[in-house]
Length: 105
Image: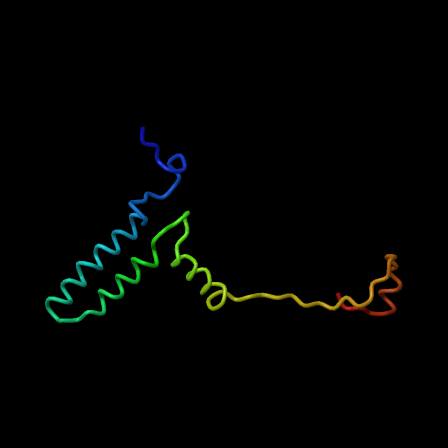
């Protein structure tokens, strides 16, 4: 009996790729064959081969996903850091101490 992964919530896979990736690889392969036969241009083959290698999935992760997350973290999304000075905080919560000292918050 065949059971669909994750109770019909998982993405459909074929061999080591998602079906979307296999579609992209197939269309890229057709374009690459046309480019080789008509223009003697080999770069699309290398691009499609690299994409096929980077999208191989093991345990629901791929190198391509890791590269996307790394680029998003280091390049595309702004990193926000909050820096605040609270000064010396005593053990007691004495409001007069804070008013006299004018400690940043």
